[in-house]
Image 1: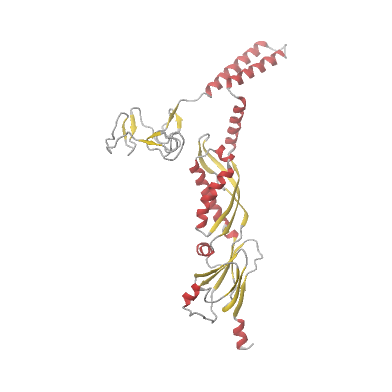
Image 2: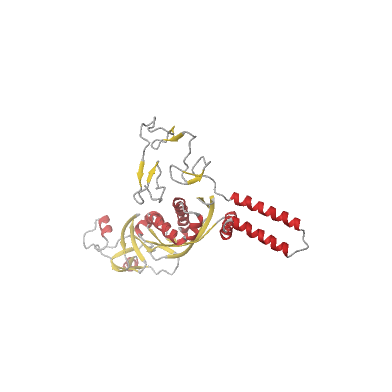
Length: 369
C-alpha cells in the first residue's frame, strides 16, 4: 500500500450510526485513530443527535438530517482550534450519537415500604409499583452529567438510579400531600400527574424527560387491609342499634324454629347479645375532640401532641406565644419574652374565615395562608 493510499484510509468521509438495539442510549463512533475530513458527510437519523467532543470538551451538537461538515456548522470547534474561515484540513474529534427516542415500559417498585402518617389509620407502611418511560431531552447535559467517556451507554446503566430518584420523589409527594391512604388508592391518576411534575424537575437536571409515569397499585399491610374491610362492613350495617335489633330478631326466629330448645338458654343468649351490642355501641361513640391551635386538626381531647404538625399542648392555664412559642399565661395579652401582642388574626383569602395562631393553613377550608 502506497503512502497516499494509507493517508486516504486514515480519513473519514462519512459518519453515521444505524441503531440495531432497543436499549442503547449513547454510541461512540469508532475513530480508530482516523481523522475527519472537512466536507465529510454526517448523517443523523430521526430520534438521534450527534455530539462532537474534543479533548473532553463538548463542542458542536447536530440535529437529525444530513450535514456537510464545514467551519460554518462547526462553530465551537472552529473557535477552539482557531481555524480560519474556509479551513479544509482533516481534524480529530470524538463523535457521540445520542438516542433521543422514548424508552418505555420500564418497571419500578418500592424495595422497602414507604412510611406515611394517615389520618384514618395512624402511621402505616405502604408499597407501590408501576412503570415509567423517559427519553434524552438535552444531549449535551446528559453527556456531561452521566455518560462520561464510555464507548456505549445502555438503559440498564441508569434505570436503577432513576428508580431510586422516582421512589424518593413519590415518597416525598405522598408525605407532603397529606392525602389519606384510602383517597390515595382511589385517585392514582391524579397523583400520577402530581408526581410526574415533581420528577421532571429532577430529570431535567440530568438532561432527561420523564414522558410517562404509571402507578399501577398501592398496597397496604395485611392488618390495614383487615381494618379497611371491617370499616366497610360497619358502613354496610349502618348504626349499631339497628344491627343489635337485627341480631335479636334472628335469635328469636331461631328459637321459634326450635321449640324443643332451651328457652332459658335462648333468653340468656339474647340478653348477652343485647349487652354485647350495647358495649359495641358505646365503644363506637365519638370521643371528645379538640382542635389544634397551630394547624386546626381535630384531635382527641386528651392528646398532648398534634398528630398532624407535632404541636405540644401546654398545661391548663397556659398557652404558647404565637410569635416566639414561649409558654405564657392563658390570659396574657402580651408575651413577656418577646413583648408582642397575642391578638393575631389572619383572614383567609379564599373563604374569609379568621385564623388565630401560627398555622400555615386555614382551619375552615384548608387554603394555605
